[in-house]
Image 1 (cartoon, rainbow, N blue to C red):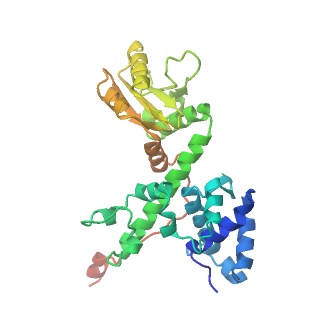
Image 2: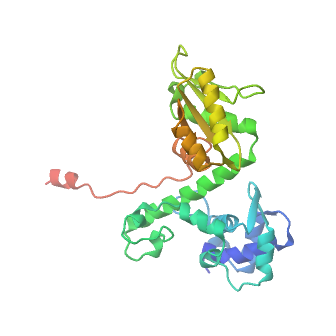
Image 3: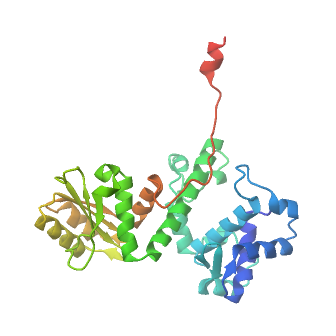
Length: 310
């Protein structure tokens, strides 16, 4: 038989992890191959890109959906463990587990909602939870775009988890690295500095926009899972004004309340707020903490070539 679809792996993977122990993905794949009679040649079959096997790709996507539904947790590189919710779900002895089954979990639905599938959303009445692959009217280009958006959403979610698991000091260095990658300080690392320490008055970093340091950007980096309120914004604005600064960037791994956004808009200096969602998107766009995995080039007929050739 060929390699089953990733949804076929969800329930077996959760059952493998039912003992509550940490499991290696590689070991789980061996167990799945035995249980589902997956032939050796099918286990070794590569994706068209040639970068990984189809078997590994589908198993890891099954684990991704289990973790987005909080049925399992990733405990490290290539490792996972069942959660309390996963244990409770197995007690119900479900006959099958697929994407429709996962719709009952708000975390899964939130993850699916994050996917901004522009091809589907531009059509009147399209739901953001409908993927192009589910719609028989979409074109191959739209399906490709939808797959790209889903990959990007999963990557952004994983980045946020990595960022939240780091230390506050790591977060300060991360945001400075990102701002430099975005072009602040002319993209030169020696113009950026992490300054966060006791008595820093809410300033965690500074970037010199010009070589003489006449134009400065001050940064507050708050690694926080909760929402940042207006009080923190007011404190940051006060620090900026004491330094006679004209602009600052406040970045958090969490979110901002409506009051925080209002405080930033009404501040006497220019303050840009970046929450955890936008932080992850910027990290992807400016290649901070990510690397290219696969490249697919979509080609079309060059009409000008054939016209020129007569």
